Length: 105
Image 1 (tube, one colour):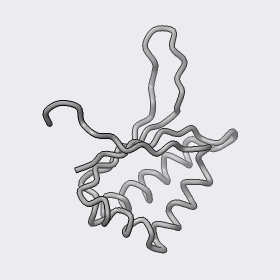
Image 2 (cartoon, one colour):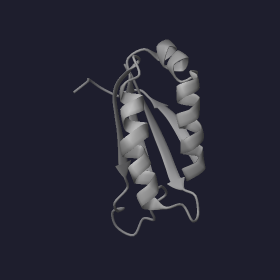
Image 3 (tube, one colour):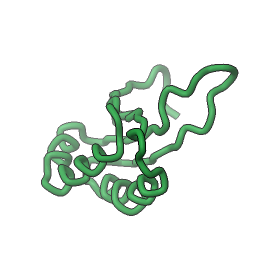
Image 4 (cartoon, helix red, strand yellow):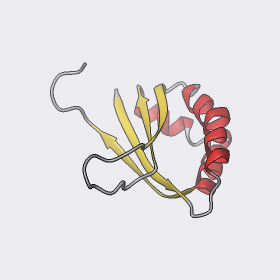
């Protein structure tokens, strides 16, 4: 299994409540229903420790059980529509594949 992290900020002037409603009503259930996805959560970054500046407003965590299938799943018209809606809210998201260091949980 691979994990993808998506770090992003909302666009200037984006409505936070509208984004979060869309995330809960559209993005989360749609991505969770993809056959290649084992889990998906969206997190609002609450605070940074110490004097650090928060680099991102949100992070998505996607647990992908089938990477090839994931790319097939996200190429559908339905997911292209979700991605277009995501792009309306977000400013330069960064998509990062991660690999565990050490034993799994």
